[in-house]
Length: 396
Figure (cartoon, rainbow, N blue to C red):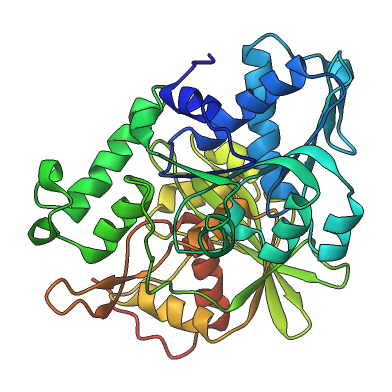
């Protein structure tokens, strides 16, 4: 059900040519900007609006999905006005909203001019591409989570035609109660007293305090100590790539079941996410694995592994020990990887999965956070069993 939130009302009051919207997770940034743009398109005939994200999969899982949901909730969706290729919707007055991603400056320039532009999660879009689009647009909305300072702070906000808005989850009355509960759990990890959370002496964990600064308060942070930077995002799986197996991390109610495919391509391995979903039965999981390649699974779920085997899946439990997580991370850090752009949840995890810090010394310790790791764990299971050597198993 669509709800006109405080976030939407604040967005409607923005007047500058370039509207910069920084905010926490679940602040209603994208869910606010999209209905604002829908309303504008309906009220102004024959205008062109372009929604842009980092990649086509990111566009589909973000802007396209939200656009359709909002249009359906408002009883404005007409299936015959939607074109899946190219992705665009034409309103009755001739206005068009299109959904795109650009991987080169040339393609951004070749896309031509437009009336309105929305750069979604702009911190993942290169400045040269964003600039080529903005200069060819009459009005621009930009949104992002402030993981780090980036080009919007150094290049856009200093310009006189820009305007800044900070939103948090408190501006979004439509924020699900489960999300609020998760944010409160993170605050409890970060602070001794959640009600005094921003006082320096109250910090329990530097990592989680910084995380809350970014994703709860919507302030610029710096998620230091990210574990993996040895990967490159690619648009598709090359024809020459050879599937060599699967990794699976079980979930159900609170956590997502994550499944990844692992390919060998030249001297690298390529990872492709094929599942990231809650509430899946083992029968449903078995239908997602379409070959007899080995699927390495979390050995803490022997019953689930046995059920997958009954469904014809070549599933095996991974060897675990007292230091198996760090062991697997070390193996993965020693190799170069390609990750498909369609692996949106895995990419999100890779950008957040980091080492913890010692609260006394503020130095990074050799222990990862226990979060943002479902797809990463699935990937790790496969690599531990196929690349690992001389691992001393600690059976307890």
